[in-house]
View 1 (spheres, rainbow, N blue to C red):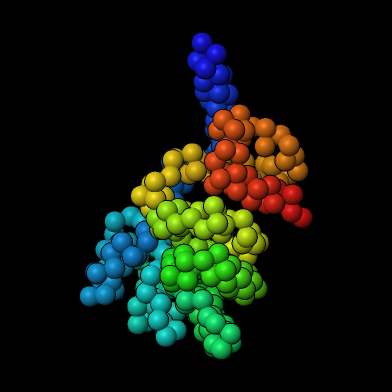
View 2 (view 1 turned 180 degrees about the horizontal axis):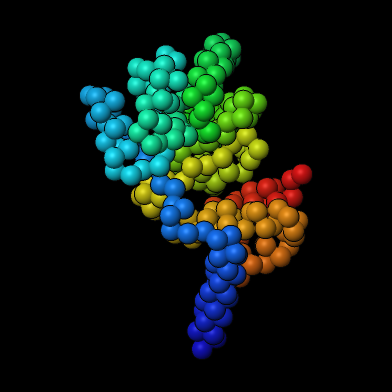
Length: 273
């Protein structure tokens, strides 16, 4: 009976919090017509290889609002100069907002060369008006040892700082290995959340690969909740209340490493200047 009461209380509390969230949304007068839906062009990568112009036209005709590219090479997007590709998108009713690209972590001998590549890439993305750049992979070095993963995190922090200086967000896009690979008692993704600088590195959650990594939807929910309450909690500066809400909603998330790390990351976001 106690477990039922606890479950019922938690459920009612969760419904109550959702009601508050939805009420705040209604005050903002969001309407269905305000939906803003984008497409990762990686989803139509074969078509983009064959005929990028015709594919972008089709994507626009389907009603999408923006696209995220996955074809940056030698300073161009799908073989087109940044402004040319941007115009192609805009002529078809699409905003060009994001891009998947990157480089493997450099060693000391080619650090400067890799950073120079990033300078070139960031300038090209800035010229096209891109708002975020996401690297969707790590080499094996990021999964075989904690030292190797720390090299990647240091690298991502440095790239993120460069992007931030040009008004672009930098982030990482997960697959399943970040959750199935454990280094010194923690999943790779847990380490990435804990050690990366939230001012320089954001995380683009791939929900499919999270579930393929065997993680419960609580992990997804805790990150979604963090996004939902971030704006309000940033103003309130009241971490203790937010922590209390989350602990009650997710039933002692300190027992879940990823949830616990997400709490710490949210806390750093809330309490930062």
